[in-house]
Length: 492
Image 1 (cartoon, helix red, strand yellow):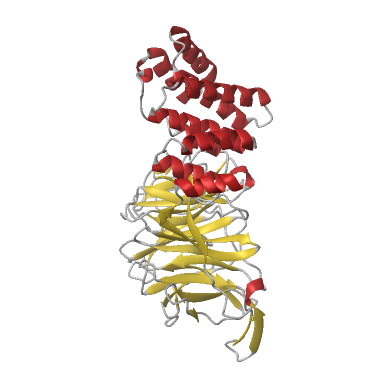
Image 2 (cartoon, rainbow, N blue to C red; image 1 turned 30 degrees about the vertical axis):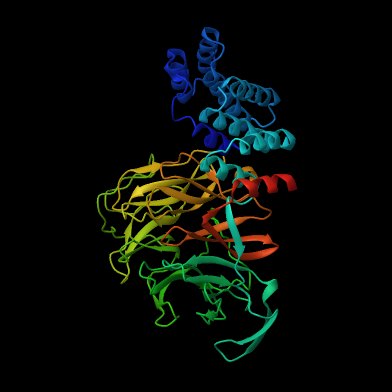
């Protein structure tokens, strides 16, 4: 639940009503940032004693207690103090002030995640009646459903029962509606959808025209699984993963220690499925390919046998504090999942991360300068970024929930990702520095594998909200509006 605290604390970025000018409030914020919560509460209390009508001080006290709630969900006294602090802040903030909406949203969010739905709905309605900002509308919509309009893509065939032939000429009948479609990728121009489906008892790749909904099978290997497709920037090629079939089982969509296979390889093919060729020839588990913005390189995750000879690479920094320091230019033999970069012709493979825990699912920023990825900290997966040429690694998220599968928006300013906050896999969006988190989905079922079109208007993802894993399209040009939210709240 700590993810909600981060969402709330991200709102505290501007001063208002002159409250931030009081030295005790400034001191309290610094103490809170340093982790000295007792001293911070005392400082905010001093500010209140100086002037009881200081909503910012009550707001900050509420956020401190809210953090305690997240760290100790059974601590009812913290929950009560958090609500009291935010409630006082709402009452004392001048009516009509923009900051008052942010405080009320924080209070409504606390009620909502604490399952006090009636109180949360009251504050949601209060917000909607005051013409809230676009950002607040998105946050409310994402808390109680989808933040943008979503439609399911009918990736099955026209009939429930279909027949096809394997590469060996055997006819197979399958029931499309009872199989899983997953691992979606949208082409840069937004016209094509590539995805994996186990409708033939193993995972094959398919290509759908998003305008006509026509479907084409790209791979025909009944003894192999193909999945994790990724389009090249020009939309002419697809990189994908292939491994020995798991007998119709859908592959784990999120990164976790041990979830990757013992052997998997990355291939390239033309968008029509022709000219399939391996990108990597060495043994190991290589997955999650993603093209660089110029189309010349591919980043991927790999658990490969470590070579005994040094790997030639550039000047690269380590990931956090290294427990397994190595000689510059060498590779650690700790059998962890690492991030690599390789030329699209299969040459110049270099290792980007060096860590004693798994690093996975890289994504390239459209500006070509950074790569974001997931890595474990204290048994929780967080999102990190590193310079694409190597160097210092920066941790972006710090919540008590795991985050997976980051993908940059076209301007490189935001990241869309998967979070398992409160044990429910949902899609989120945040600034590239980890601030201003907004929940994009809160629907029955789990949500995985976001893929964004180059114009940033179409987002595809996989979800089992309809019982089986299916592909969905979120229209980021159509946020849920105020009147629609009121109707959604009325249904609740």
